Image: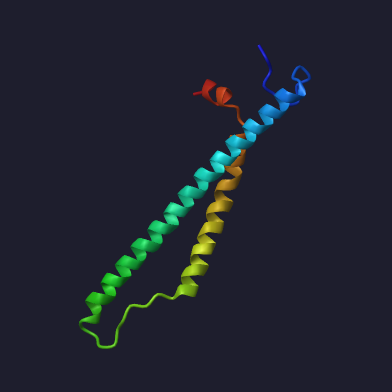
Length: 110
């Protein structure tokens, strides 16, 4: 049975490179999944928040003159950027740790 560690003396250089590339691909797939989840949460929050705000302003605007809906784009951009950074920071380390576990080893303990 071949060892799967990249620092194993039994593996030739080509096998070590292949295993290293597989780890990199696995880490990149976890990073892209994390990014999609963060982007989806940000987009849904932004869309639903804007829709609810617009509906509230339209309903309240019937009673008060001069009340109109406007989006503070700079504030929204800062909040979206902060949410994306926090999403990245809170998911980077677990994704990195998960990418270092071999799939066969992870399935063995389930």
